[in-house]
Length: 406
Image (cartoon, rainbow, N blue to C red; front, top):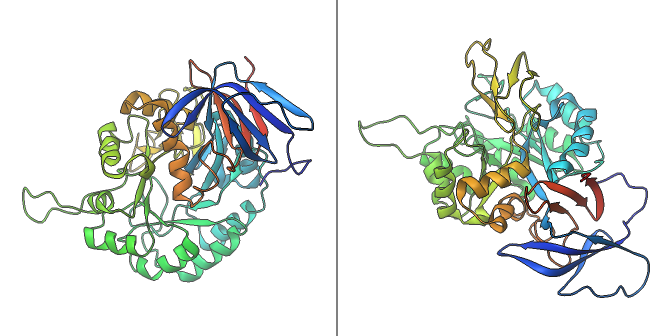
């Protein structure tokens, strides 16, 4: 939800854009916005029937559905775990990257602190990018990655229930490792109401992974990262595990951190062959400092992270005791991820945009109202410069929440 002075924005007509549809880019189209929705898409520029209208000339820029980031910890100077003020600041910053909806991601913490933080965050009203729920990345993880996870953590149904209550009115979307002890006792509570759980941080075998999928863990986040193969049983026989079970299941979708270092682009191409565009999403998994120039260090727990170049992975400082220089999220922004998809995957603009809009909308069950430029859909839009593909203007629910000075 957004903090608005008026219940609905003014009526708007966007003309002169190259409109990005799922399978094509079309010109000579006008897009009409009313009461926060796309009310009409016309081949020509019809005169308004009545009332006062705002006419917006896109001057040949690309008009695309707004981006949805399913997994993001922070960006700029802000990180979700710092609390409500940081989250509110993120909602103001993210429209500059074309993001119109996101899942603020919460790291593991002690039980009481974890629940209290989510409750505080749920009170935030967006000042720009829409909050579509909270991604709870831990504590029910078999492998820590760069997160601080208690190795003695046990399944705790009360914890799950209280986090869901704390997140209200938003959804709580849980990370779940199929090989976490007794995860099957938690998945029904995590996924009730049709909410997906996200598989991650795992060395699970095929059987455990398929059982988790059947229980509602139908999406895999930062796929290939902290997704280990099971231990080899027969020399020379590559064991199958979570990766193969997820790729082969018709019920699952996946997302990737497409910065060229977290995952080889060939793995993303493989997933596209298995899942198609609508089953593969782009995320950032961005940390504090994302989108900023290199040369500065940022706090990350008890240590620091830095970025070798703009859009590079976040890497732990050399003082880290167990993983000096290790990965700790990314420096990506969603618009950079889209540009990377075009360059690294040899995709056309509509396909790259879909991986950042309609595909994540489908993961969240929002495919009937978000992620496409279509009559009746929410007016969540981004205007991309025709040359650089960087955001020029962003709308959330028909309200312009970002405009770049040219």
